[in-house]
Every structure is written in C-alpha cells, then in structure tokens.
Image 1 (cartoon, rainbow over the protein chains, first blue to last red):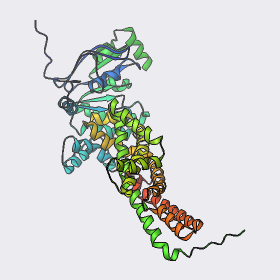
Image 2 (image 1 turned 90 degrees about the vertical axis):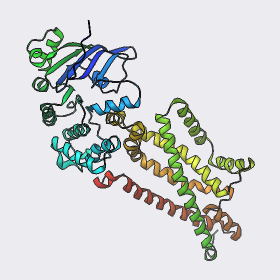
Image 3 (image 1 turned 60 degrees about the vertical axis):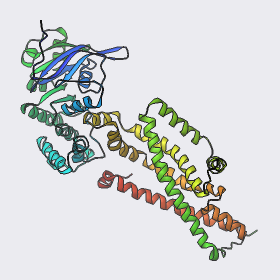
Length: 251
Length: 227
C-alpha cells in the first residue's frame, strides 16, 4: 500500500515533529497539513507549544525529529539554497512587530527587496507603495516606526512580509501587544488577506477571529495537537474536556 | 611670593605650537578612524564569531586594557625596530594608538551590539537577509547609535592620551611643549598654553562628533531626538 502523497495543494506539511529545549519536550510528535488558501488558527494555553510550532515552520528553530515541508521543500535542511528557498516561500509576522527602528517604513519594506531579491530601487519602492496600500498606510511611507501606533507598526510588518510575495504567512500572536481598537485594525488586514486567498497560519488568542476567519482550528495542549478540525464543527462540538474548558475560559 | 608670568616667547614660538597641534590632530583622527574599524570588527567577532575567534579577541582586549599605553607605545616603537622593522615615531604612535583604541572600542561596541534585540536578527532572517547583511544593515547602526556618547568620549580620551606619544618624540603638541620649555625655561606658561590648546581641541572634537552623529543618524535628525 502506498502512503498517500501530499496533494499539490498542500503548502505546509508537518509530520511527527519533536522539539526539545534541553530536557523539556515542547513539541511531542506534531503533524499538520495546510492546504493552499486555508487559514489555520492555532490556539491553546501559554506553554502549549503553539508558538514553537510556528517558529519551527519558519525555520527559526531546529527540530529533533520529524519533518517539515513548505511548498515541497524541507525546512531545516542545511545549506544556503534551502534557506533562501524557505525565505522565498514563508513570511513571518511577530508579536513584537520587529520593525527596524532606524529605517523609514519604506526602507523597512524595500530592504529585503533590494538586498535579497536584488530589485532595482524604483521597483522596490513601487512594491512598497503597493503593499502599504493593502494595509491602508500609504500616508506613513516616510515615517519611522516610533512615530506609529502599535497597530500601524504591525500593519507595516505585515506589509513588509507581503512585499516578498510569500506562499504562506505565519502570524505569531500578532495582536497580543495591542489594545482592542488597534487589534481590530490588524485583524481587519488579516481578514482581507484571507479573503484574497493567502495561505495563513496564525497563533492567536483571538477566539473571535479564529471563529470568523479560520477555516481550520488546531487546539494544542502539552506539546501535542489535542484536537483539530473545521472551525464550525470544532467550536460547536468540542470533543475533549481540555478544549471545552479552554473555550469556556476564553469567553 | 609672586610669580611673574611671561608669555613673550609666544611671539617667536607660536608656529611650533600650531604645528604640534596639527600633528596631534592628524595622528588622532587617523587613530580614531582606524581604531573604530578595528574595534567594530572585533566586537562583531566577539558577539557572533566562533569560540576560537571570541577567545582570541577577548585575549587582545584584556591584554591591551590591562597594560599601560606608554608601555604599548614603547613596545611598538623599540620592539619593532629591534626586530629590524624601522618605523618613524609618528607611524609607531599611530599603530600603538590604533591597537589601544581598538580594544576599548571593542568593549563599547560589544555592549551596543548586544543591546540590539535578538528578534531584530530573527526578523532579518525571516526576510531572507544573510547574517552579514543583517549585521551591516540591521544591527550596526542602532548599535553605534546607542553607544555613541560613550564612543565619543573614548575618542576624546584618545586624543588627550596621544600626548604620551611625546615620549618617543613624535613631534605632536606635548613634544613641542617640552622643546619650547627647555629652550625658554618658562615651563608654567608653556604648559598653560598647551592645556588651553588641548581644551580647545577637545571641544572641537566633541562638536565634530555631534555633527557626525547628526549626519549618520538620520532618524534622530529628522525626529529631533537628542543624542
């Protein structure tokens, strides 16, 4: 019998991943498949391993066992070419925005376009204007990060990732540092992206967002995927006591 | 007892002072520039390099910071010449000052580099920048910006410390002063004049570093934040 091959529509394929920090096993055999155009919300308590899973997919962590493939390329394979390929395919947005404080919004976006993609300056600047329009911040192109609100900074960070035209976008608790009003403007941008068919994996505490935008929800607990499925079914009929408790505590 | 000041020798000797000050400026600007480059490279190596490199740089820094500058100058000047490498006093002075400056700059720049949060590198990594590109475009400028006041005062200190190179008769300001006072026997007046010139140079250097800061830290300039 043949193992079912991942369909061509699969963008991210995580198989049996184990990640340890010293003696602490943070990911304990995690498998996950994300198809093109899907929005997956990873939820769970602090310390459940959800952010670590995302960082592994982004290639920021080395894994001890298992396999992660993005667009058919294995993540974590040594070598510059593999890394360049991964960077080509994956965009990552962080909780702390991680904009470069000494560069203008425009330069934050064009830096990788000119250095990595070797685009000429005017093409890079045109791209910056385009992605800033997508996140509604055209007027901030010459501002510095410190002149922006947290929500605006996070939208710039999203635009910066988008500029590289990734196949999948990873969001690591991107609204956790924001107050509700600013959270809303960032979530609106993400909703818009999802509607445009961007493949997204988002670690989030925003159950409202997960319910509304995600096609698929993954509940992590103790380093494992405890429960997962289509958003509508999962929230309507939670199977495990832990997920039931998690949902009720989030409300 | 009243001392009677007599500055009349200045009428004849002022070009010598001027020449000395000019040489001090030349020696120290060169030493500061090269020392900064050496120190920055070593700081990068000390933070991001492999273990052997880190140890090597650590050894260099501690060796220099725990021995007197005068002894370092003598080692360069007399030591290298006894090995057959004849260098002028000025060249020896610059070499010794660069080596010295490099060690102190390494420590200052290391603090600056380490103050740039790891997540900045992660973000750069996720954008596809190589480690070298990340250091050049993401880490270095904010690092320099954060330690710029400490760097500036280290640079001024070096300018003042360059007076010690008079000991190998590099004809800078202090050496000129030594010569003039042995000609005229007006030591008090001579060293008062030299002190005033050094003071003026220090202020000049501080102003220059402020101006350089305004040029390289564009964000500070545009937002009007004090350095």
